[in-house]
Image 1 (cartoon, rainbow, N blue to C red):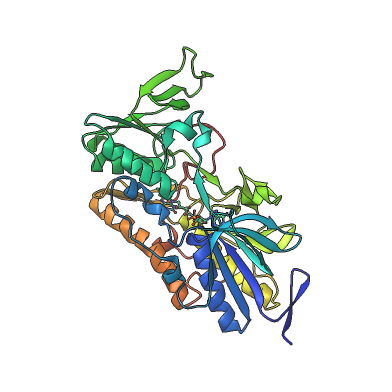
Image 2 (cartoon, rainbow, N blue to C red):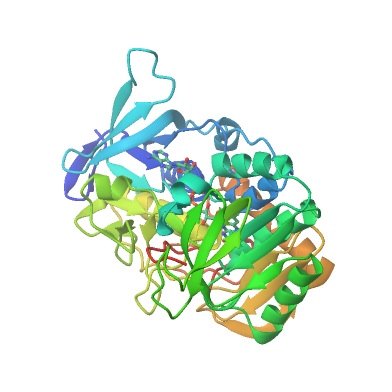
Amino acid sequence: MDERKQGGTKISGRARVVVIGGGYAGVAAALRIVGKAARRRVPVSVALVNPSPLFVERIRLHELAAGKAPRRIELARLLGARGIELVLGRARRIDAAARAVEVELEGGGNAGAETRRLGYDALVYAPGSGAAQEIVPGGGEHALSVADAASARALRERLRAAPPGGRVVVVGGGLTAIEAAAEIAEAFPALRVALATRGRVGEGLSVGGRAYVGRALRELGVAIREGVRAVAVDASGLAVAPEAGGAAPGDGAAERLAADIVVLAAGFRPAALAERSGLATVAGGRLAVDRWLRAPAHPEIWGAGDAAAVLDGDGAPLRMGCATALPQAAYAADSVVAALAGDAPPPPFRFAFFIQCISLGRRRGLIQRVDPRDRPLDRVITGRLGAWAKELVCRSTIAAIRLEGLRAGGHGSPGEAPRPRGARSLGSDASGERLPSGAAT
Ligand SMILES: Cc1cc2nc3c(=O)[nH]c(=O)nc-3n(C[C@H](O)[C@H](O)[C@H](O)COP(=O)(O)OP(=O)(O)OC[C@H]3O[C@@H](n4cnc5c(N)ncnc54)[C@H](O)[C@@H]3O)c2cc1C
């Protein structure tokens, strides 16, 4: 009988792998695990848990909010005929001691939600992140976001219904906020769009990059308000205070920015599943993982993408992004297969940034060259060429996932820092805006 060891437990027969999350990291990991396992002749069964049958291209949600029809990408088609079981449901709890995931199945019927318990020998934790509306009081009730598909759709409806001259305030100065403000201003020229942020807009960009973003936003009619923090949102707009001051809503130091629509784009909140399951978390709820992307107390759990706190060379969590999620998924997948095959652990995960990409509507874009630590260099591509390059990079994410389905191994071997390639280095966020943000903006 086939008998291997994983995390101190002997596995007989087919190893059960569960992947939580059908986003960039989860789908890429699942596909790569089946491909690599087949090559290594490691018998595995892989189940991927996701609430929706559709893959959400999160990096295009600002486009969706501005009215562009999203591509319909069926998860089942993306996963192809590789034998991956798609479990439509939401993981409610990981019982790490028993090595099982409790899943609330979608469409569980009237008698309450149906649940299913999935045992695993290896688990890939990739449930991603969502909106962080609660970072500003009133945000949950009164603000919208582009962080998830439902919010982006709700925002689209509000934008369509807004009267000419209606005011939109986007909160945040990082890449998502810049992209959202530019996209909305371009698609809805009759609306008055403003961007309100702590510090400066595009703080992590080079001087040239920041100047270009400022110019493009002004050309699109976006009013920029820097050096303020949002202190409250209500039905009639936003209260902001000078960044350094201690103003609170209601006191004289807070200023009102009237708005028909407030869009909070100042941070993402990681999925709460790890915390809820009693697993160790850091950085606002991201799963704590070691340099091999494994949960230290549970080496049979790997983390990848927004929901995991993968550390950079300085010990800080890598920012959230497909740019980081896809290579992490590739590493985790290779590492899962190596562990199931009984191999020694691979070298630790390493990562090098290459570029940041920002869309500024459909006709302008910025490609900002960065060093391996994501610090801006003095080289940028702007204008239509920048827009075209950004579009290419967006397409390359899905292409990279499809490639995993055709041929496992598109992202190098475990521990190898990815070579600079656009597909892996799209839009980073040196401004921290795509990091989970517990702080108000
Ligand atoms: C408007 C916008 C623009 C962006 N632009 C860029 C960019 O240019 N470059 C870049 O690098 N990044 C960009 N990002 C960030 C990027 O989208 C995320 O970093 C990326 O989606 C992370 O991938 P992921 O697989 O970790 O998580 P996600 O893509 O969030 O996928 C997670 C999946 O898990 C599912 N899930 C959640 N909870 C559970 C559960 N309990 N059980 C089962 N499934 C669950 C979710 O429904 C989802 O399908 C952008 C994000 C936004 C919103």
